[in-house]
Length: 572
View (cartoon, rainbow, N blue to C red):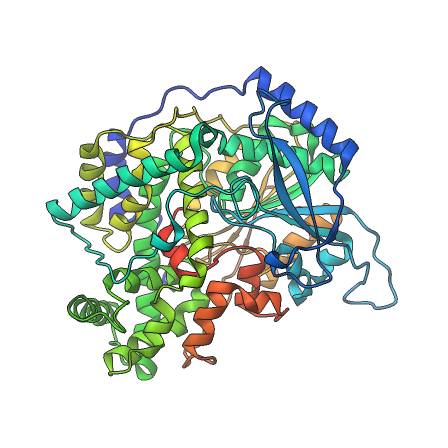
């Protein structure tokens, strides 16, 4: 891959367009009532604990995983009011040293994980202890996952009938017409109304600040005096809120693929930055495919690969593959190559096969999976509610149209789909919060670890730099010239060495460290059928079966319930 271009043409353009976005006012301090409510709820949870037992069948978890619930207030300003239950999963520390079978590893407590979203569940996280890269941590820690408020069975949110959630085939114009824009504006308004209609006044309590407060109640319920936490992607944002709100409750925190916490960035500007970054990562994939033209035949330059992709999109617009894969589904499937390079061989093979007359791999990889509709709709609803509630958004469509029309000239791949994902926030019926100013002073929290890939598109690298500036004593470890979204416990032993040294021994570099990139994926025809991959991505069966594969890791970390969800929620 080429060297990172942190100041691309798209990035330069943003310097001018972002000035048009509303600043959202001065950052707000957390309310006294909410602080008192959190302390009261945590005290109650500490007394009650969590009654772990067999997991309900609906969770689809193996027998060695235990499940329970923890009660939290819907509204922390009224802790004696309505309570909601968050589902929690756990695998106890194994105490087995993966390098010395005769050594018993002492337990260090619970390691709580959040995979991001907003809207992703961490219930599968404890399964990750079966993977080789995680066995050392699984020996010392109880691995604890949970479904945040609104997700799964944790007071679930819904904004529309899941049966109506997947629309296929759809278009994905990179330069949409005025009539298409009017249609999408109408859909965004209807979606925002649906969120309010189906949830009512409770909708306003699904926020990042409440996610951070819930985390402290969970800490107390687990019997942990101080929290050991790993957050990925969006999980880094409310993890940073947690460090700001509860600095004395922090033991160790890992921020993997950090979201920019600057109140001026949350969330409108972050999404503009993200769309620009996806353009660079899309180019990385095309350059890789061009280097392997002998395998895929998509073209021997990035531009030729783009023309192959555009040829497929035009053909799908005229005649959707299998009647359900149009340009929108194609774009959704290829958005995943911007998140994880594990997908590069599979997507390249599917595109190649389609252009050579075999649509089946593309149908299997890009087609909507109705069995995942309920989970995908729920994830989308939580994503929308949290981001819309968290901060001010432009309420004038002209601002969105102007900023993104300019951006799409240099970053067309994801710009408009990102707009349609977030546009309900322009018409949100609830009051918006002011983002908290994430910041800790010297000695307020123990040293924390930030992990970042330099070319991450979903969480651009500037976010890691900004979080590093704001958290005093933090250490930043960068995987150079790489772009996988979330690098903890992945294929890079250098990154994993820093992770294990921190979580197992409390050791960190002085301020910053860098790792060489992990190897690029090797070109290959998919080693498994596209149908099997599609089913695994939709249902997460690979992790549930305990297979030590990259898809198992993704599911265990809750990174992608389905390709359709990833396409619908490019935010984090």
